[in-house]
Length: 84
Image 1 (tube, one colour):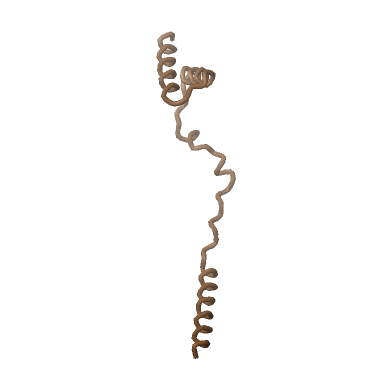
Image 2 (cartoon, one colour):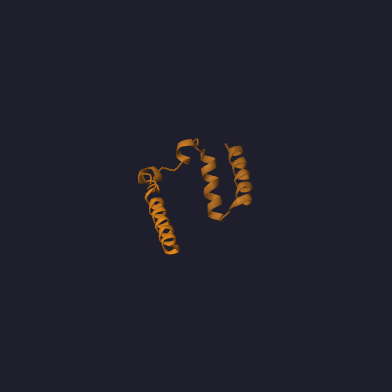
């Protein structure tokens, strides 16, 4: 009698496992490649001034990042605006 119980239990476990695999949702489709290539910044940013672009180029040339870059750009833009 215990052999039938074990066999029935195994059959139930195997049956549930196959149902669990059959009911899983297919993986979500990846978005089209064209959607990935459009940067968000281009759609929401305003046009940058000539001073801003020039100061960014100078900061890049000096290899500045983070707080130093921000401070440098602020001083640079202030100086360039005074000249005009």
